[in-house]
Image 1 (tube, rainbow, N blue to C red):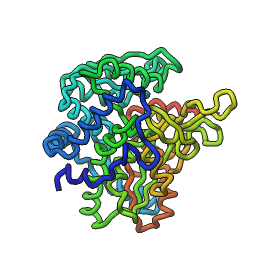
Image 2: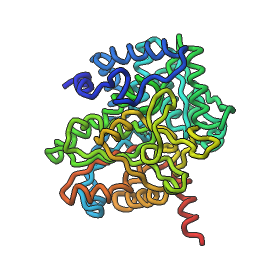
Image 3: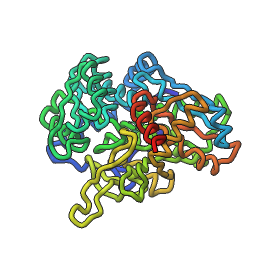
Length: 409
Ligand SMILES: *Cc1c(COP(=O)(O)O)cnc(C)c1O
């Protein structure tokens, strides 16, 4: 089957929505740009020449297919057959590049010669700067001034890759302010500019497009597990920030009713403390970044309903919104969402390192930390695929500091 045929089998949003979630909550001035993008995406996703180019780059440049690895020692410890879908082995060390390649190829088809993006932790900025260098096009990244200081290493990576990084000084000087600034740039320069969003968030068609592009994770895993075990998995587990690696793993299995889908959010210091990023678990329905979904809001009288700060040890899960399709899967009962704290994630990272010799990202470690619970649902002979979204090199300083704190009285 061709990639276009596989993609055609994935659910399409109806009227730009997954159930009641999604939509296009943007300024009137942005509507023409979004309509142009939607048309272009609709044409590209059923076009074999588009996928030939994307799949070619995913193979030769990114190194796909990523491996599906049967983690035997981890399996024995958790009491289920665990397979790891190794997105950490991709070029740049995570799943984000899959989406950036797809959007960059689309931008070129649309005749847009300039890429812009916003980034919080810097990982999406690095992935965008990477594809801009690959395609030889200018790239401008908006990043909260606070984040520019906190994520100096990623800023240096982006600059080495030829991108211009704009520190955003407005508001709280973090991700949501950077997002507003990127939107402003897009409205102003829509003729030649493509806005590359990094997760299944933003106005329609972004959540749909990014999920389709990341579905390579689940499409490959399905074929690989059939070859390895001759059947479907019993459960899929992935961490959820904006939700792109999870949506990409889940999407090709949504129609397979026997497969449990489990998303793992960041509980930070603990959901009860208020310092967390468990948007689906503890947020409310609202609008953020152009779409309706669950969001984290302040609950005190003075700021009631305003977007609150998310907290997590992993910068990549530190987002106060979540993709609208996850909201739909949650309320429809198709997927379940649990949360793990910073300490639990660290223990998950240590466990994977000790049992399998793999240092995963702190984001990914939240999924590892949910394995005991999932194993108890599927049993010893049950098969669980974990989305191993990224490698841990970027997190070693954070991990070292945290471990040092833990041993000093
Ligand atoms: C960015 C990132 C995430 C979170 O993003 P999603 O859109 O939820 O996938 C998870 N893991 C890694 C390694 C990341 O870099």
